[in-house]
Image 1 (cartoon, rainbow over the protein chains, first blue to last red):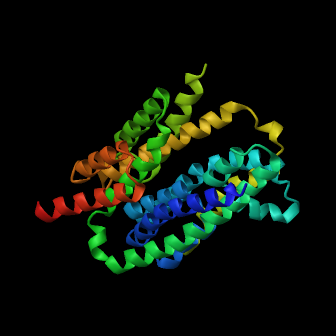
Image 2: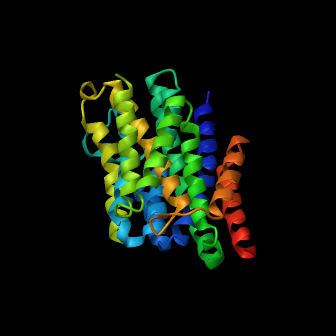
Length: 218
Length: 99
């Protein structure tokens, strides 16, 4: 009967583990604890947050436009989740801001696995609030930890960020088409890195991916 | 940097909010979703390339390669995310300490 809260809290705790990694990466990438926390509070979308921090870690302020663009493009799927949840939640006026902020992979996944609209609403809110609370508490813990470790964490930071991207893309490489798209974007980024400004290769990777998907469908 | 953090957060939030404003009939075409999924894969793969194999915009192979191979192995074994990235960082740091 009350399965939804249990699922929501379990998922919140599991995503909290990601958040520790994010918090530590954030401060070792050169962000302050406050800035790292702002990303979890305001951006609140894992892949976008990792991308922002990863681009800033390698490119610094010179690559800030790319950091923003990468985070933005990685957030597009939340828009599709919002489309799916809008008629179910039926939030009036300004309260849409609240449901919008909690519209992420986890809250939508739990909601859409329920059988009826009332359960979908409960799944969405329970999971959204649970993940938000754990995500932010554990980001703070990770940021404080990264701040304590300081310099030693820097030695492997670039590898940690690369491994984080690998971990985020891994479950999405389910089809051979997406494996091909990933490989093509990887090659394009490496092939263009020395001839275009910092940050642009990442966006070219996204462009190639969109083109392959678009033309490959015909 | 703080302003950039806020600007990026607003940019990401714009998708979430837009989805609640736009009537579903305009974007129900599944091709939009497929292209959005493809862009996610493309961005993350390009980020692996830049983060893992370049230094100052030049292609570079160093201790990040074994770290990524280790990470891929651990992901294949379905290890938790934090184990994967902590192991990659540790291996990279160890290699740099000794070479």
